[in-house]
Length: 153
Image (cartoon, rainbow, N blue to C red; front, top):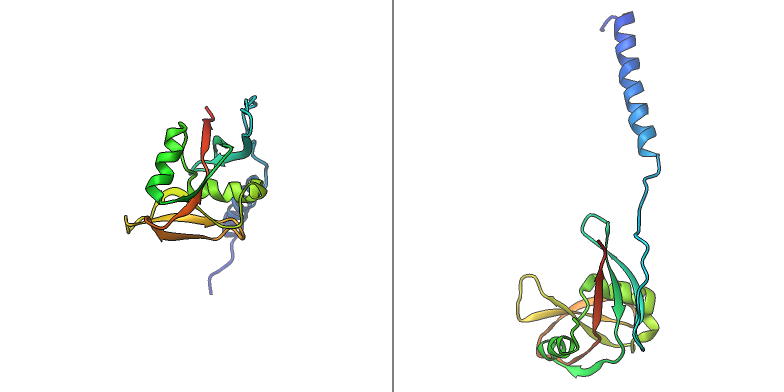
């Protein structure tokens, strides 16, 4: 058995004080700054919200454009969105659209702009009935909506 000394008690007390200080600092709130901005929405556009970047910081504002294409392959849907100067939403953006603008979508599948990571013959889509995401062969015809992004500096 190790002898207890005044020095060992003081050392242990110092170690515990450091742990308590570290824990107390973790409980302090952090400032989360979202830059104020005015967003111009054109007729029929809907504001979907702020998409976050990989570190959780605000990345961009997401705007849903009016209209949709009803029966389109992935390539056709992407060209349709690009023709309007926009893009198909990413998977993350589709989740945001489902959360905030679900009523703007029919209860069916919509293409995202993302190919499957390991199979380039497939791309991701989302079902706006329940928010599930899955991959489809790019030749399948799904619906599509276009979005525009306003980058947050």
